[in-house]
Amino acid sequence: MQRSFVFFLLLSLALISKAQRHVVVVDIDTHIPIEGVSVKTDTCRAMITDSEGKACITERFDTIRFSHLKYFSEKITYEEFTDTMYLVAKNMMLPEVVVTGINPDLMRAMKKNHERMMLEPTSTSILTFDFANFIDRRARRDRKHYRKAKKILREWDLKN
Image (cartoon, rainbow, N blue to C red; front, side, top):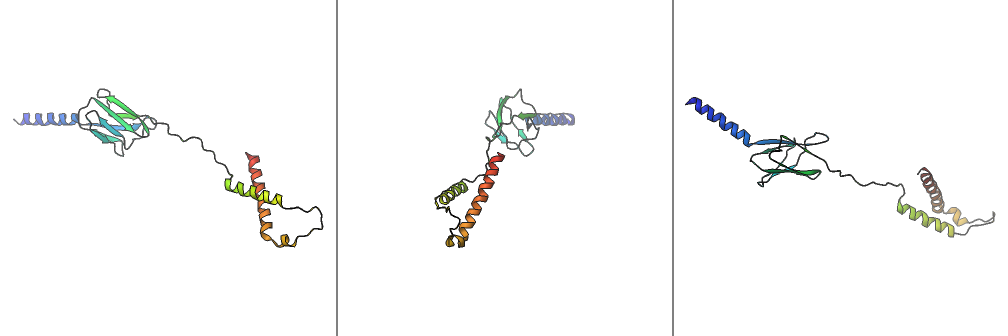
């Protein structure tokens, strides 16, 4: 009687362990476990992998689907099912980014300042003296800043 009880106990444990299948989902390139993979059987039972990429399937199924946003979905049959599932990553690369050192607002301001300076009358004689322009610090500072900025932009253009 005791032998048959132990036999049935071991048999039931074996059946329970067969009913549960564990799977680890990993990246095919890096072999790193993938967290958050949706594992869905054809019997509409769905589970999510944990931080170690593990999921426990508790029921028998005909097909099973593995899906994740960053990976291609994979659908396999029960016969193809193993304890490790490899997913192929989607190439989610950004398009080429072009970075320039020219601020459009600065360019417009410099162009406007250049036009304003070109419209100002220039003296052809050496003896002309404009006292208001002499004491106008802002205009001198603006011209100095304009020349400096223009020089920097010219240097940048030569580098590119």
